[in-house]
Image (cartoon, rainbow, N blue to C red; front, side, top):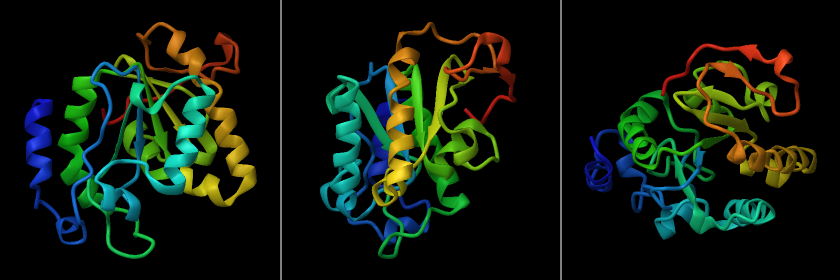
Length: 209
């Protein structure tokens, strides 16, 4: 489906049980020509309340990270694996079936925006977007070329909020994004760690996207 169809369907979606725990659908926001595309896990309380991604303390941290790159929120496409808040306080992680139900919407967003760099925040987003099973702590900060773009796994904003050491790692990872945004789009399935020389790159298998 195209972007408009995906958005219309998502706003009234009842394909999984998350439709019962949401106040409103948080589809995503940002320009459809953004080079940077940020994917979180799921909306939380603040996102569900406002209908927009990355609000509250996590949103403030993301805004500071983007400002450090001289990239305002208005130049980045922001979304999450699932578009509805899971139940619980704090919300539980989304289930595989819920992620699968929302997958066509994320695929439509990626196709419409066609970003150069996709930042995957946290373990779930990293595994879904890269197709790799490792914990994000093992592959964070490494750009993985997939389908003509770089997927860049890093730590979740929530994790960084509560752990200063993780916040320092997240800041370090984001500092590498300008180099990727300036690079040519990838044409191979090599793993590119931007701190390594080309001879040290490692091959990986294509992911789900």
